Image 1 (cartoon, rainbow, N blue to C red):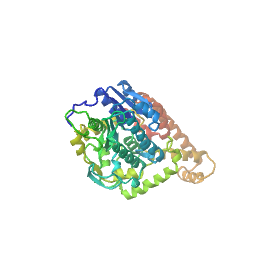
Image 2 (cartoon, rainbow, N blue to C red):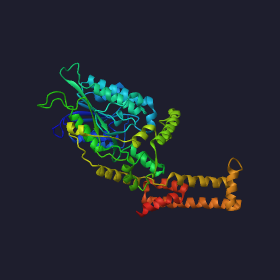
Image 3 (cartoon, one colour):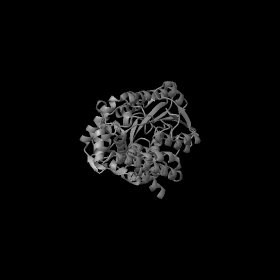
Image 4 (cartoon, helix red, strand yellow):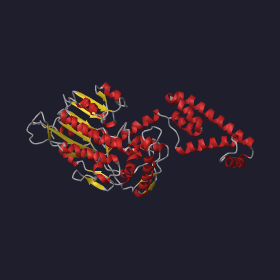
Length: 478
């Protein structure tokens, strides 16, 4: 395409479903920058980390449920183009909420299509996923000629539902409007690689949290396994170019729009092993990358175990207190099996070329996470927590509890080292005093070094002692 930078954007109204999310908010801001008349961010949430910035730039925030026709109609009425980004169940325990996944990704998409046809909205760009063609079998430099992965063979509800939704959207391409004869509805699909960038809220927070706790014990798959990643700004560019590719009023251009009915793979164009991709980030945060490796077959066994456990816990999957599963089968395939794709079709038909290199993108991401770490409470891994907390509880049990349960055994071990109950109780009291003193010192120091988290530093140091205090001392020194 040879169009101006803002072709089809200036003086147009846009709706971005999932507009308060990581990609959605970036897309909204870019549309505003390019001169859109109005941008509407349609989302189930009323606030997000980006909502204030969106408001300040004039984006209209519309709270609503994608599965309610009334909400969808309210958001889409009077729109020139829809970017359908909203989805559910991409990762973690959300993947196991099968009913909600289908309700949002399939039924919600049907309501968006109905509204587009009813209100004669000319363009719809759908944010899809690699998983519509990938299901655990190796793909090297794949392209858009690959068939859809069989619906019944998907190991996760997200990939299956997104595949069904994409096929529905592309089959609606070219539908004529009932009232406005001669005008048609055009659609296309963007299939992004794993998305990253400053503020990404799905993959990186979970990975960094596990690394911080020391719960990344192994890599999955061979070291030569490669997958794609895409920086958020590159994805936003591709999505906007796709909307331009659906314009049907370009002078001297006959036939349907170039992107009409087409899917496009989008990435940075630099396939890499996922663990090697994450290495600079984790190293910059002083977290360890696992050295041991687990085969895909063994990781799948682990993933199925977690899947079975969390399926039993289905009624509580959306509760905050239930942690994310360590890994699920679909996630094993994503990191343990080679699958990367060419964006040549997007380059030739849409003019897409990544404007941010992987090096630049990772540098920006690292800066974001380093700043985030400086603003949050730092601390030791899970093993230090277990050692300190279990140790203090055991010492208290030996010193003051009656002979019930495992207490006699623990007391016998304690007496072997301390020789008498008097010494044992003295050790416990001294240990408590030391923890309290360290906690008070941490609180006093944090008021100068990290005032926003001073109280949290006190409680963490009171529980862990020097295991926690050393992190604060390191921050004070730097």
